[in-house]
Amino acid sequence: MGGTWFLGKRIAEDALARGWEVATFNRGLSGRDVPGVETFRGDRTNITDLNRLAAQGPWDAAIDTSSSDLAPRDVLAAATALRPVVHRWVHISTVSVYQGWPHLSLTDDSPLLECPPDADESYGYTGADGSPTQYGFQKAGGERAVTEVFGDAAVFLRPGVILGPGEYVGRLPWWLERAKRGGRILAPAPAEQRIQPVDVRDVARFALTQATGSARGGFNVTHPDGISFRDFLEACLTETGGAGAPVWVDPSVLVEQGVKQWTELPLWRTHAGVWAVDSSRAVAAGLECRTIAETVRDTWRWWAADGRPVDHPRWAEHGIAPETEAKILASL
Image 1 (cartoon, rainbow, N blue to C red):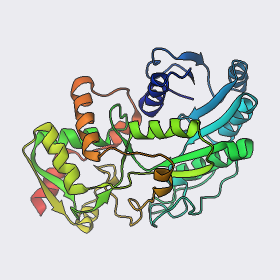
Image 2 (cartoon, rainbow, N blue to C red; image 1 turned 120 degrees about the vertical axis):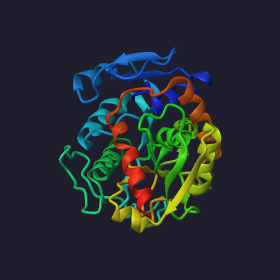
Image 3 (cartoon, helix red, strand yellow; image 1 turned 30 degrees about the horizontal axis):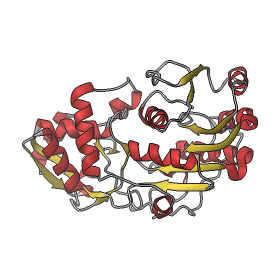
Image 4 (cartoon, rainbow, N blue to C red; image 1 turned 180 degrees about the vertical axis):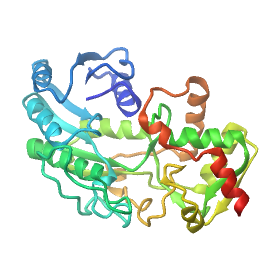
């Protein structure tokens, strides 16, 4: 479901490389079809299109990478239409489904937000401090929808942040461009804060592992080792050849200056649990993660060669304006 950009594209490419027969279902409006897949066009919110897709089955597994902006009821409709012709469902979800994220440390057994499986897009709310989010409620409802239809034949992958070649949101590309520009770089202290982004290629490989497995329930898909913010920025500087010097600024100062967490300084957030997500169950089930320094290196090589893959509205949200950064640095 999807299959033309970032994670969906990587899953399709890797499945073909394994010798699998792969079909993708999408509207054909963004990204390009992976050569070698069987392509079906349609809108997954349209029951006629879903029924037409189901008539092309059966399939051993469906991997859903395209439900991020869908209401639970739309996920429910897709799962219901495809259940007779799909043996197993791998659902790409998010850590935002947890009640405690990003305030608390999380395991796969942490309680989820409550949302009915047939809820529409208006269900849920975003808290005053940015958590929980309506997005999290919606994704939790999507998980319930799939569970209602597929039961133990469903598995849920819950990444935090996915980075790597082909990224369309712009988090890592922004840091790479900022490192390349050099100079004094506004950086969120403490420098030794560890972050847990996971490489898109590793998520894709794990999704395919789960497509052929028998596990059920949810898996947190975060980097088990992580990397310190200092080492992350050093990797960005090394790969881009930037002559920059991070200036580590206390989070309270950044907050006072109105710096938007998560977006103006991508990957930075003050909440205690944002990078405290246990992925040991996924590791035991086959998740293997390359170092984040490798992700930085390969993303820079891709970015320098190809640039932004698609136009996406979230791209404009990421990165602090140079004049704002300069003003804050000058005030220190």
